[in-house]
Structure formats: C-alpha cells, structure tokens
Image (cartoon, rainbow, N blue to C red; front, side):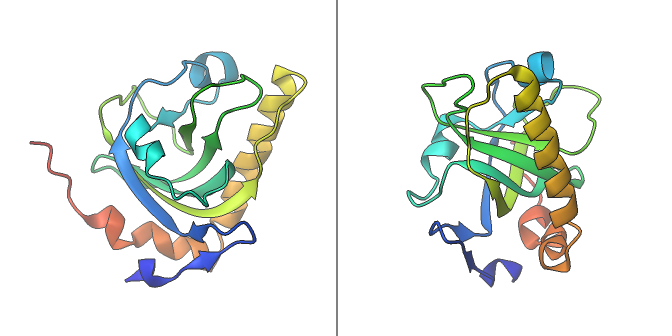
Length: 162
C-alpha cells in the first residue's frame, strides 16, 4: 500500500497524511471575498491532526464523494490575515464544480508543505500568495513521488451514504 511511504519534514510532521470528513460551511470568504472557493472540514477532523502538524499551506490530492481525484492546496491554521480564533482546514480543489457540495464527504491526501501561515498587509497580497501556492501545488503534484498518490486505495474505497 502506498501509505506505507512516510516522509518526515524538518518540522516533525509525518507525511503523507490522509483524512476525510463532511464538508461544512466555513467563514464564507473563499468564494465571495477571495474568488478562491474552499471546502472546510468540521472541527472534529481538525482536532485529530497530530500535535506535531505545523500550521501553514500544504498540497496534495482531494476527492469529493465518489467523484474524481483532483489536485488541491490546503491552509491549516488560524489565517492570521483574518485573525481567526478557531483553527481550520480549508481545501481549495483545483477543479471547477458546478455547485456547492456542503455535506459531501471530502477525502484528502496531504503530501507536502509549501509555506508557513502568515499575515498580509492587504487582501491583494493574500490573493497573490494563494495563487502562488496554487501554482506550487500544480508543479509539485506533477512529480512522480506525489502523482502516485492520486490512485491510492484511500481514494478507491466506495463511500457508504446510508
């Protein structure tokens, strides 16, 4: 199984990290304010992150319900620009969906770290950083060591919706 491959970064994280949960409403900023929609995990999924998992921006693969597996970039933390009081996991899937999918099951394989979370002096600077993160995710996921995870068994299991 591919998940047996473990990578340890200088921050002590264990990657890849696989998780899933139902998509919940977030702060409502991704689509409306940033033009970059995100799918948010519920608090119980965020609470299960290992203590050594650093906040910041990550890349990997994502799947909604029984759909296709797509590239993703994810912010984990408190979003300093917005001064959030609650830690979140916000996933931007590099795919255009026709409609919202709140309540759907989101599966993610977090494979690599892009950067630490940080504050920005303007909304424009934040958007530029996110676009740079997306470009970095696109490039990293072309690499064989990461592309193999697109077909991991984690994404192949059928979801029981009952």
